[in-house]
Image 1 (tube, rainbow, N blue to C red):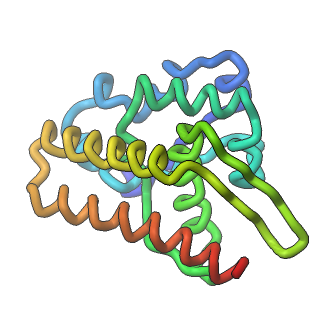
Image 2: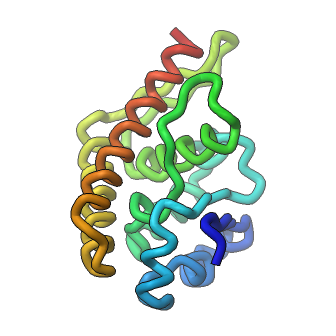
Image 3: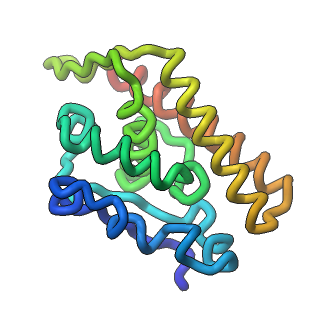
Length: 177
């Protein structure tokens, strides 16, 4: 297996709410522990047809799919490829961070997303955001423990998730002060 895997969610899977076929290639209940171990932080998630975060956040079908995806597969923080970003980071890194943040934001009830000529404005319930992010981090740690990952790797991943989230908002502030 390569050190990186691209996982695509199709519009057909979203429209039919077919979470099972969508997660087959990254489901810890379906693949061997050594493969789960090897996919730690190596999966790039992409949504077919999404040009940006707004395409997922503003689509009721996509939001509902992401919520069902999390209910069945809550390990995004373990699998997804994350890197702290800056405003000038390579586009794939920015997309990786954006997709991860989108997975969290689809679980925030009261959210406002506005595109203006000056950039993007995003308002949401910070407590809900923090609770869901903490759950993602806890699930990542549980899965890492289940596949006998060293505790140092688990704490490094937790710190990486926090740095990636913080850098995403810092990059957004740099682009849209």
